[in-house]
Length: 286
Image (cartoon, rainbow, N blue to C red; front, side, top):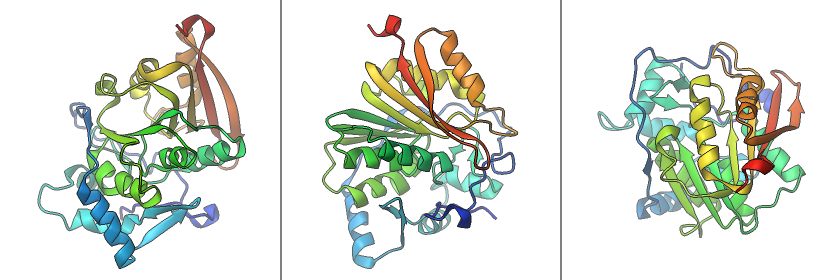
């Protein structure tokens, strides 16, 4: 049975796996999802208000109040025919990821929590900076940046349904007065470069599981990070069964000569997990 699993505070009580059994690819060739901005509407604020007034179920993760995904699943499965089509496809396939259709946005993946912990522990500064939460899903990383005083935060996910049903409500639940500070973008990375701005910090977690997307992801880095900006990639060392691994991704970065990379966090608990810190090389900062 397909489940949207929020990770609880106690990791031992949750399913933290991301293996070949939880990532399944569609065999059908599907065009890239065109990049588009998803507007934050009055309906989103009204829905958040109703959540509070009706005490609808929410989850608390790392001190953030988030829409309960069981409730989101009910909205999806009870929707009109053709509504939430992408996510319904994933439900029918009993898969967390369906290539070119749904990219796992309705799940808080383990490395997101690693990066949140690292940002707190190292007191990474966001005050007056511009931030991109790339492959944002629930939006925890961007919400953290807002709490820490970021000037503006853009949230990106492959699916506009994820942004509307999950990310935007979460942003509002945790930061009501942010309408002028946030933007939301849906679509494939290959179609988004011209729509995104320049950022001081890019935060991304669990986004290198598919090697087919490495050049698109690096293209986003090249097109949007400021010359003195910093990129944090939180990831498992190897994604078994789907080919993604940190060694090959870092190798591709280094081959261009444009980037400096370093591992700033490593955990050997379970599947090895790391955080890669990326900056422009001195010869490519102009």
